[in-house]
Image (tube, rainbow, N blue to C red; front, side, top):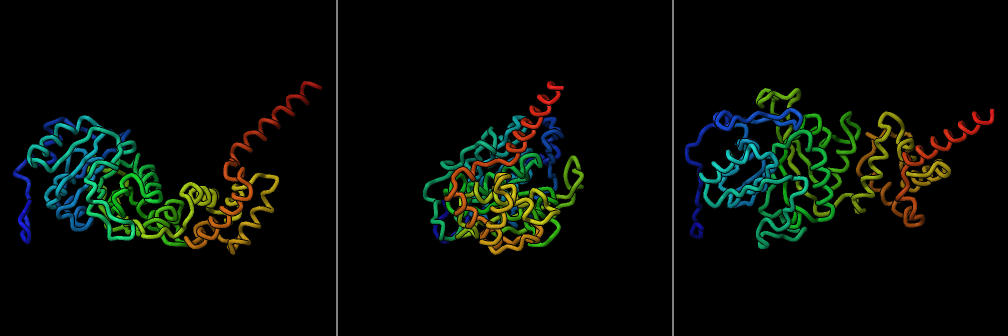
Length: 344
């Protein structure tokens, strides 16, 4: 530890470049896993700077790959960097970095979708939710194939204050396809407004902080890449269980080009659909002719609050699945047609 009042700095010793690492270990991006390597350390440094001051921080990096962002994080003077990498081909290159940064880099060969981070860092880092964010950060250049399911998983963790958020309001700096980044940050009424917009913004302050051209990656993806920063809110803008909010939002965006009452109606069984949808919209004070993209987080708060009361009155309502009812109706119709044919 540095003496009080002094600042110890750490810089990695000279190492092979990322391009040389890729050549040395014969690494190739796997298209099926939507892997893309970022080789320009000026850009990886920029991503890490956008994450905030990482001095003495504990950082959890997801999908480090050949280690470009990993190097920039280590050079940001962190106390510890934990990397979780599923692809065993990248472990030797990461081990080289670990050897160059003794005691600073911890490597886990595992899957970020299932890895338990709750006990990965010291208990002393934990902060109350109402306090400033802890000195814990999540940073990652995510493969496009896992980016959406992973952020939904982490948003649910934010809602439950578990997973990476047992430490408090842990900040995240993550890469997405530019279009996904724009959806996450889209404002009410914009063309990119979507389920992701509402789910992210009711729980976090979400900022699209950087766009990286696709040509900076190897192999070059067909799209540019957006870097998004998330800071969990002290109080969610909708105070209902995550699964309930997700259900209402998903249904609202079922038919994004139609009026909102069309998708929201799918929350209710067919026999009561018209009456219940009218009740929901009337009590929530939401205009049924608004398009889903025109619904603000405040609109969704009202809708979720009213829907919760309706579910409390009728517990079977929350388990209703309109697709299942549709399938059953089709099956019944098919049976009826078969019987009619047999009578002829």
